[in-house]
Length: 89
Image 1 (cartoon, one colour):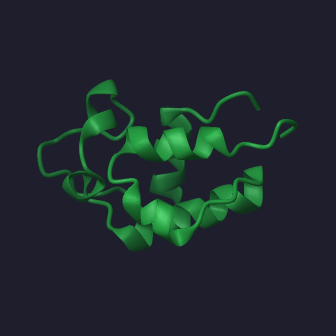
Image 2: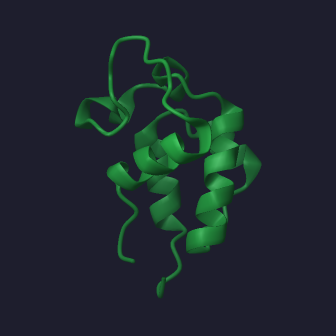
C-alpha cells in the first residue's frame, strides 16, 4: 500500500464508530473535512483510538495513543498514518 486515503479513513471511522453526527453537515470523506477537527465531525478520542487499533491490526501502522490524541483533524491523522505505513503492506 502506497498511501492510506481519506476515503479509507472515512470507511474505518464508520465501521468502528458508526456514522457521526456532523455539526455542520460535513462528510469526513469530503475534501472540505480534512482540516475540520474530529470533534466537530462528531468523532471523539475514543473513536479515534478504536480506528487506529484497527488500522494497526490491518495495516501494521504503529501510532502512540498520545500521537492519536494530538491528531485533531483528518489531515493530521492521515499524515501520521502514511508516515508510519510499512513499505510492503
